[in-house]
Amino acid sequence: MTKQNNQKRFAPKLKIKKGDKVVVISGAYKDTSKVREVLEIFPDENRAIVDQVNMAKKHTKPTRENPGSINEIAKPIHLSNLMLVDPKTGKPTRIGRKLADNGKMTRYSKKSGEIIE
Image: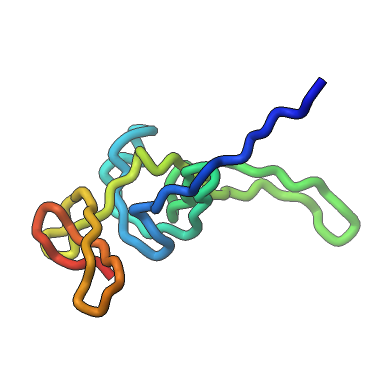
C-alpha cells in the first residue's frame, strides 16, 4: 500500500494579514458584524484567529502549582467568513492587488480604491 501525497502545489496569496481590521460576515449570530483585529493567520488551513470572535471555554486540569480553571480562548475561524474593513469608509470591502510604483504588489480596497497597508 502506498502513502497518499497530501502536498499542495502552491499556497495562494491571502487577502487578510495579521493586524488587519476585519468584519465577521458569517457564523455565530453573536459574532457577526463586529469589527475586530486579526491576531494570527494559519495559511495552510485558510483560518485566522480574530480577537474576541468564536470564543470557547478551555478547561485546565488541576496540578500542584495550578488549582485548575476554565479559560476563554479564541478559536480559528475560516477566512471566507471574514471581510476586510475599508480604511476610508469603515465598511466591509473586497480586496484587489496591483503593482505599486516601487515594483511591489500592494492590496487595495475595491470599494474606494484606497491602498491598504
